[in-house]
Amino acid sequence: MNLLVNIQKRLPSFTLDVAFEFVGSASSRTLGILGGSGSGKSMTLRCIAGLVTPDRGRIVLNDRVLFDSAQNINLPSRDRHVGFLFQQYALFPHMTVAQNIAYGLQKISPWERRKRVGIQIVQMQLQGLEQRYPQQLSGGQQQRVAIARALVTEPEALLLDEPFSALDTHLRSQIEQQLMATLSGYPGVTLFVSHNLEELYRVGETLMVMEQGQVAAYGTKQSIFERPGTVSLAQLTGCKNVSQALLQHGQVEAIDWGCTLQVSEAQVREAAHADRLALGIRAHHLRFSDRPDLNNTFPCWLVKTSETPHRMTLYLTLQPLTLQPPLPNQQHHLQVEVLKETWATLQAKPFPWYVQLDPARLMLLNDSLS
Image (cartoon, rainbow, N blue to C red):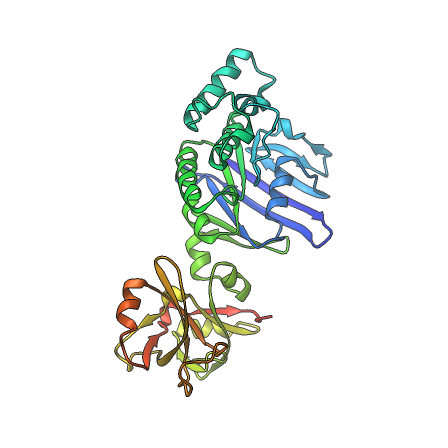
């Protein structure tokens, strides 16, 4: 299973210019697409599905040309063998669950239609809901109907556009597990669009990041997460700590953090090629230490905290606090994420604490902070 996309389309706010080839394998048939609002993620899916026509380019699915501007080929949506799950599901309100699922099966026999719908009803756990209308269903049930409708035509590619965005937290987790189980047996390629990195990290091995209508990165999720390369890509993938930096005598001065850091020789060579150097480290990669003599370990003071059910985000300054308690808008240098068990132990310790920026976890980035 493979999908080749090379398209351009001028839009009011930017020009979509996307080129990639995804080859599915037995171990990975899902391509995650990450990007902020307005980056072109959904528009790319709509072009693949045939809902929007690119200005030029080519789209090929399993060696079958869906669109080719040079050859004047533009297959209609119904002939592309592509399933599309819309963000808001787009169920027909005047049709029952069974009718919604069967909508794309007009060209096959009634017997085959009933058989396929029945299979999806069972797989999506919709038994007993066949004659209900969308307004009589919960959000999770509506989403399962939409997934069944997308899969019932046995598409060669499945396009999922923010499939969990309309669900509450409990349903999101439940439906995600069900969808992942369904996709594990799906033989086609899946494109999964989301702005949620953690969500995409769970669904597949390959990740594409989009910015302003273009592909900013394409590769394994581990490589993009560990070596994003630019400030914008680091921030898109969830990096909270970024500083402008200067390379000086084999060390890197983090201007915004007010400290100078030891880095490896390989990192120094990498930094030498940056037009404008920046430095990043992820909030969960910072560590507290009782040994101030360790490399890249600095005294720190707590400015404020932010709490989630299982974690604490600690906002730290590397400069001694002269006012107690800190002012509400006190500047902080670094964010650190710790489990609440760690926080319970840490908060009992006197200041200063010591925070380590592990050289192996530091990311040298080529970009500005604008």
